[in-house]
Length: 289
Image 1 (cartoon, rainbow, N blue to C red):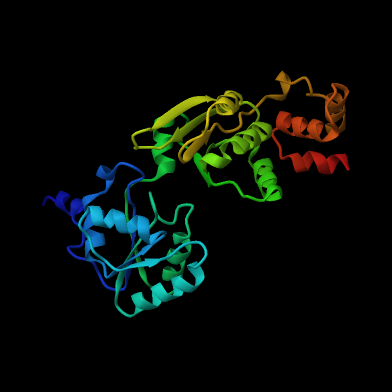
Image 2: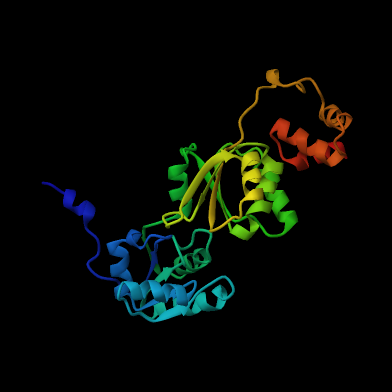
């Protein structure tokens, strides 16, 4: 008996008491799936990061549905309201401005709340800027880590980058154009001159995918004005054998003192030592106290 047809069967209609996590295009409207459009047209209401943006998107597909705002600053209050409506028998689709909801997005909290309260959560797959950029980067993709946007607070950002210095997996970040230059500077300081791929305006008219090094990327965007949203793919740390290192027989203190003798400040010497050894900067700092 041939059961292959079952692989392609889905529910014939939207179910009550269900949250549908619907991916939307990240640029090219042709990337919206037929299933996604059907779900949006059949649910009772749509929870959107920005109702103006999602309203225009639905309008392009001829879909008219009630929209409610669900975003970072109202997620606690609105999340409870949405789940209460779902418990009452309604169905809801959550969408973000572009891409897959709940990925670097407050939709994560709504999905968690639904699971806590016994509400079914159904993913409707589609575009994700992170995976789309990685697929075209030519960088190792067997193992990778998605880090999203860096923390805005300098201390938190520094702590995260220190932690990631020894990360061997390919790393994926997001960044806005007005912050790109500072972020590239921070990456170069933390990771050294590694391979990087910058993908902007993915699937849009001005799509650009540039593969280079962090040092060269800093140079490029010193002269060039960043435009559009960026997905940044950075190579993971490589393992260096001690036998190939000049500091092989040095203690941590001797290693730091070597760089100080080369004219670096103590803090810069600590950072450089940490990079050499592939460990967080804080580990070196603690040993020097």
